[in-house]
Amino acid sequence: MKKSKLTIYHYMCLLATVLLVSCAKDFLRRPPKDAIVDASFYKNDDQVMAATALLYSKVWFDYNGRSAISLGDFRAGTAYSAWNDKDNVEFNTTGNTTANGDSWRSFFIVVGQSNLAIANINKYAGPEVSASVKKMAIAEARFMRALAYRYLVMNWGEVPIIEDNQKLVSDTSLRKNTIPSVWKFIISEMRALAEDLPETPAREGRITKYTAEGMLARFYLTRAGVGANGSGARNQTDLDSAKYFAQQVITKSSYKLLKSYYDLFLFPYDNNSESMFSLQWAYAPGDWGAANAAPSDLNYDNKMCNGDGWGGDKGATWWVISKYEGMVNYGDTLISGRTLDQRLKTTFFMPGAYYPEITQKLPDGTTPKLIFPYVTGDNNFLNIKKYVIGRAADVGGQAAQQNYPNDTYMMRLSEMYLIYAEAALGNNASTSDATAVEYFNTIHTRAGLPEYQKPLTADVIFNERIVEFAMEGMAWYDLVSLHYYNKAKTYEILNSQDRGLFATAPDKMPDPTSWKCVKTSWASFRKIVANDGNFRIPIPTAELSQAPNLKKEAVDYYAK
Image (cartoon, rainbow, N blue to C red; front, side):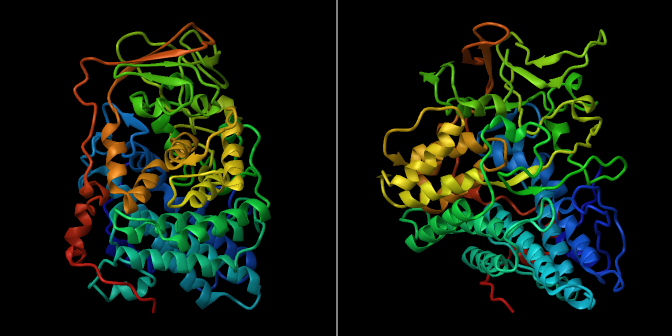
């Protein structure tokens, strides 16, 4: 679908008069409908909650598609696209790269819609609106705005903080704000709004106080390195705060880990006990932006989906396969072995592996359960499995091309366990802290692996995060966090990665017990050369042409 190129300025001005809201009975479980909203709308609790429902879906749509993995995984080296979307794979992202513009636009749509929701609720909420719902709805909007700024500052660095769309209409002197002041803003926001959210979801899929505290754990862990300027120790106070908020969520919230990692992505998994915040999608024929379109870009073949199957050239990198315990890297040309780690099969399709939840529709009309095929030759693809849920017949008829019902995780409880472990490690070379080791092993053994017996190190925790969250748009932000305080280590990781083609062969078909991965000898592209400039994605060209002040030196932001 062709998208118009709206800049921040144009979109914020548009939002001053039009607000898209969800007017469905179940708010989050049915597709939202677009409507022009006037002062007569915000008259009761249901209407106010409907006004913030869209903040859980449509506003994130352009990011949720191919952009989330293009920025979060292709740039990080956990996955690649061999023939398409290569700018981020090869670290050649420009102001005209599609995922760059789509993500920037989506994040500022989140900011703009959040600002407008806050303004309208404050201005128009009638006397029948309860104080608790008004407070919660405004907190939801502030939460979304703060999270959008987390993505903005970690991708583009210095960005403009906008809290009032109306002021922007008459003010074209838009300036970027400094990185420390953006982090100060989003942490201050998250701390304040956490107290206005309920401890359990007010509706299915809604955020809670503990969602906000989980985001604080994430934010503090990252900000701990911001002041180090790439070559120093992380701030201990921020590390302590990250550890505190992570443990708050683990010990006091109602969120619980699922027993099986595979079940996390086995439809229907929406709003399960481990999901702290998910984008809420619904099968929505004719309502573009209400359903999840991302699976269309991930499905590897149209026989196992719904007329799309555009992900045939996307798959695991050599580097990420070597991170799974038991997959041994023998020199420069061979990875071989087997793994007990359930996360490999859950994340990437492996030749010969059985996926009974997905059927194929073959030319002869049969619909067998999927066994991922072994394609012989000197290059093939370990295609992406996460978020791939199959044909309409596999999900009760609730799917079509670019129209899928499954939600997108934005934060899972398992992250809290690994944040605690990393924050407890802090600036030390290793740690045997009993709680940190226990939390780490809770995640490690859930994947089917034996307990880790040695002291935890930064490399061990980093590798665990990579395999736990691969293809969830997380890995790049782990590298940005590392780059804040240890540039040399970040370049060492990135420059050692092999991102080129390879072939994977099972020892038998089906139900293999091991695989061999061999690099494709003729592939010309294999590695990148990372430097400081790669950690500031260029502001989209269309934005700079409309707001030239974005080229000026950044200034500190002071809340009005």
